Image 1: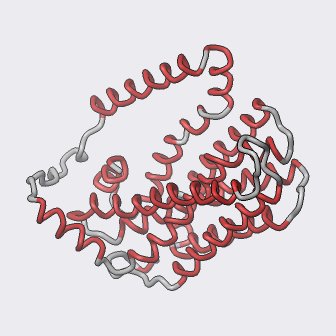
Image 2: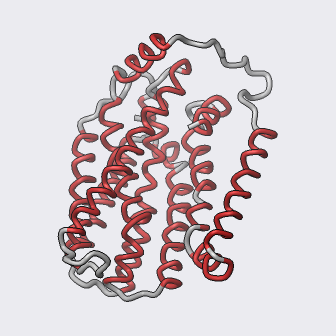
Length: 300
């Protein structure tokens, strides 16, 4: 969230989507590292040593951030840093929650990213193992390809609001396409491996419309509420990414009699059906959203 806030201070509202698409794309290098590279490292140097290396890299990035990043662009008036009382903090949060147009953005953001991460972060590997019989390295390769698809998707969606002059319609198209992908995985029994992999890669690519939601959410708030605003928008994403993987676990568990046993294809199809329903519900709520008066109709 600090990176999102800094981008809004450095680059303004109209370039915001493009800039954060690059930030989010670069952040997903970690997703790539968690696929085939981590599988290779765990096999050849042990998972403890692999995590020690990741910890060192994280510390190095933090030091570089402290050394190189500044709060304000050159010549800009520094943002006020006055401490607030707890009562002032709560009043500010209440003002954020009262912002017109926030509810539909939160609804769509709760479902969009969460549905994607439920697949990429939890069930893609087990699905490819239990249904298609892929070994660890092959599964890692697919996960790596999904990570690349997410990065490409973020970079592709980033400039679209300026190309088409709308944010809302881009989100609607991305969400509708995601519903179609989840629905296909739910309805098609035993798809061939090439189709399953293609659909798996389509999920993180299409779900990158969430970057547009971040920009749309930021545009709802004046600069004085930017930090609280973008954190509130991101909270919806985090809540969804907490609830949906847990819910999907209960769904799969209902199909498995013995703990540790492979799940049948019907269990995964039920999960995909649930994700399609959640995405569709978020889309229906979002379709009723009104354009906030705080940003130009060009980006509605």
